[in-house]
Image 1 (cartoon, rainbow, N blue to C red):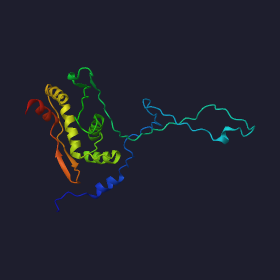
Image 2: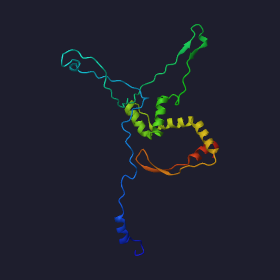
Image 3: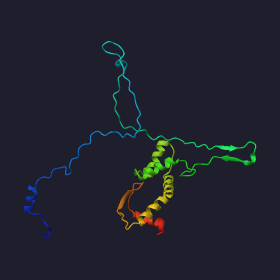
Image 4: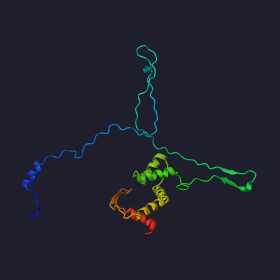
Length: 219
């Protein structure tokens, strides 16, 4: 114990006499002021009319004239509205030539063939998972609450896997671009992940470059 480093009285006195640091350490930034709402957002007008009493002059009793508006803007939102998209394809036949059979308009290409969800719902699930970090089990609960349709997490997993299959040509092109470079740099830091059942698990993220190389090189 005697060999452990200690703090001398002189060091304590020197520390107490040191000038106090002024906080905050970072230079204070000027407040940007009131933000302007984005110009690209659509504007929906809500007109509030004056009361009947305000439409009459308090002095002479004549009806007042509208001279303008006092305008204020706020950011508003319309909650997601689920609806059933009914696709009807024409069927045609010649009444005089029954042997020709029936012709039907071609079905549009879909991400999930014969699935209950449209492409927009599938894309929204993928964006919510990877851009907004919203787990699929939570999305399943939200879909059931908002639409009344119970879609299992396994089904959502299938959507994600299918979208991944469709994106493989893009990932292959990205991998080729990486392999054509002089070096590849990746971060292998482990990430703590909370599972849907509450368990925590540390995942070691494989370098993206190795995964991409495996996709096109078969390694």
